[in-house]
Image (cartoon, rainbow, N blue to C red; front, side, top):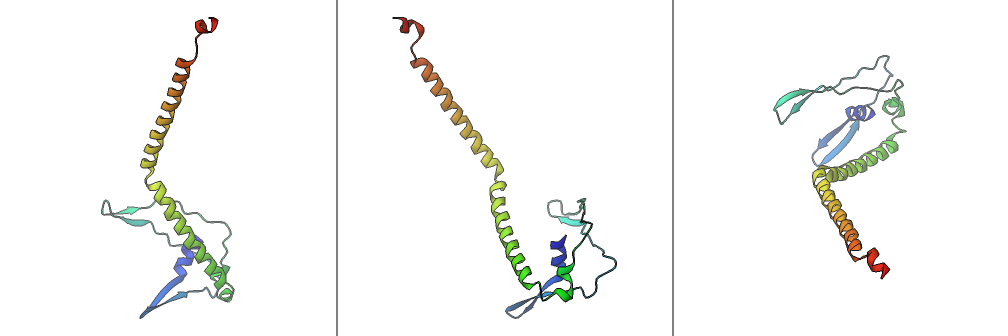
Length: 140
């Protein structure tokens, strides 16, 4: 929820080759806080709108201090650190997606590897049985 709220309070202004990051601030704490929830998205596969049925939940206590104008001077460092952490998170999620995207290939590889190891164990056990002297040979 905080991430979506933060996105709605930030915007970029382009001026020639420069991009300026701007932020909106709450000047007065609201008595009532409302949420606009995106419930429709466009499905490119079906080329139709699709209704989202995701549950929207939030904490009983909401901290708005990072959005209040009187705290604007206190939060730039915090927000810069947060932005850096978000960037790192995106890189890690992208890396993770690379490995989970080809899940079938990894599963296939692991299955083939398991079968190979099982065959090696079977061959080793079989060779031990054929090379071990039987009771008759031991008595002589």
